[in-house]
Image (cartoon, rainbow, N blue to C red; front, top):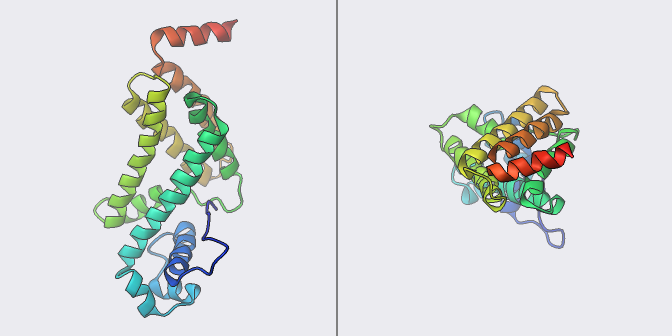
Length: 208
């Protein structure tokens, strides 16, 4: 599971225990299947303590999604892309290298934003929040596309995000090699969005 946890040099606060517990439960089992009573029991706090920090279950779910964005989108996807790739194009492709390792983990839990969006729908606050968190992922892709001087970065980001989301769903179906398949398609998408001269140069290099 993609998780950074709380600082190890101090005892976590009650709020952190509640949120970490909700993070674990919601990530693995979804929103509707997890009740407040279970979160309270697992976190070792009183129900009144939970409601002092999170006035409703919806508030807890929204906080979970924000934490998921920090841990998964920024601290893992974006950070791994930067660590693995020397250029913007390399960083884009490196996302699928990170996904490949993730898909082979025994505790692979898929994309919480997709899961919550499909479970709760766009009319629910958690569904709306998930749409925004997914949009933020596309923003990261768009910035990398601009840095790589690709044509129509917004369209590219949407197409690239389709490959990301599709590979996650395929992995959830049991295709552990979905990231490698998506990466092969991603290379074609990169070539389609390069300026004509750059795309020609790339094909010439491959031919040589």
